[in-house]
Image 1 (cartoon, helix red, strand yellow):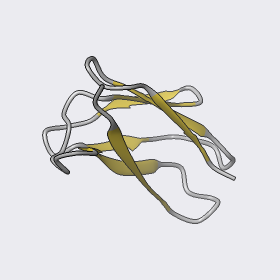
Image 2: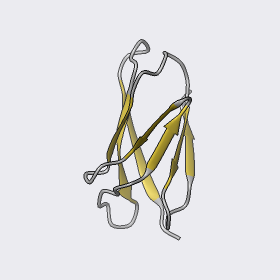
Image 3: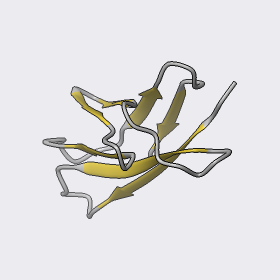
Image 4: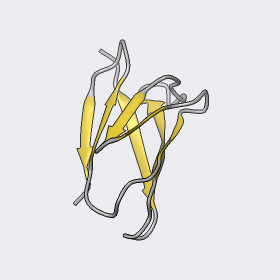
Length: 78
């Protein structure tokens, strides 16, 4: 089974978006087409593995990622 690496970058607590880059844990290459979900927001990673979840109210979120052929993952903020 393949694994994805989730890199999350976010701004201050009042920020309204979460962004990051998804890469293959073995090859470190970007992964396109990964579904990323946090709260009611969702995005799909682009050819560079980048995604942006927009219009999120300030708070803590669990981020779910899924892509065929890779293990699904959930990461939470604290």
